[in-house]
Every structure is written in structure tokens, then in C-alpha cells.
Image 1: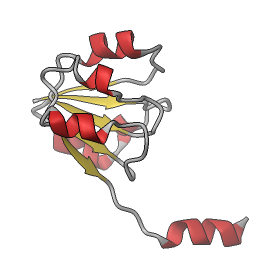
Image 2 (image 1 turned 135 degrees about the vertical axis):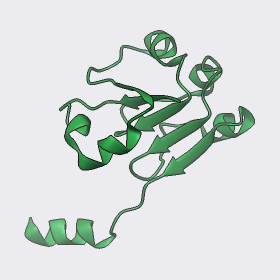
Image 3 (image 1 turned 180 degrees about the vertical axis):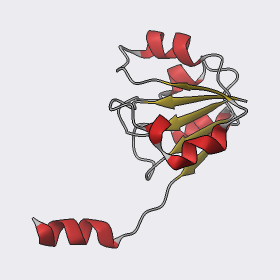
Image 4 (image 1 turned 90 degrees about the vertical axis):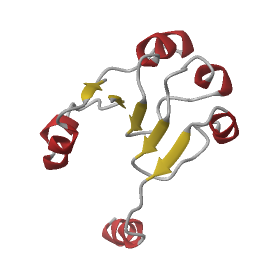
Length: 112
């Protein structure tokens, strides 16, 4: 399986313990920002799975239609407006999102 991990600007994903779970897969970590839909389409066309760390990259209908191999988009947080969910559904792309502890923002707020 070909997996792309996007927007890892600090290049930290490879140092996570859980990264070892991807052994045996063809994984590419993108640690540089993209420059638009054309560049994203070229970079991501061969991948089956995308792992999004941030909402930096926008996955519009136009982009999703240029990714014929894409089967899954995994987002480390909640999916927001950066993914065209309807288009992904129409193109048989499964979207999975992460979960987090809802107390974390409250703790951060009290800390601040």
C-alpha cells in the first residue's frame, strides 16, 4: 500500500513509536508546503492512502478527481472544511478522523 503523510513541517512523524506500524508499506512523508492543486495532484496521484496532520492542504472536488488511486483519507483530528466530503464519497474515498480528549482544550484554556 502506498501511503502519503502530508504537512509534517517539523519532520516529526518518523520519530513517533507508532510510525513502525507502517513497516512493509511504501510511505512518503511530505515535510514541505505545497504550492497548489497542480502540485498536489502530481505528488499524490500514485498514493492509496493520505494521512493529513493539519488542515493546511485543501482537498477540493477538482483535486480529488485527479487522484484515481486514492481510497482512504485519514485525518489526525476532526474533519473540517478542507476536505470536500461529498466529492470524496462520490469517488468512493473513505474518510476517517481522529478522536481526542475533549478536556484538553479546557485544560489549555485554564492554563492560559
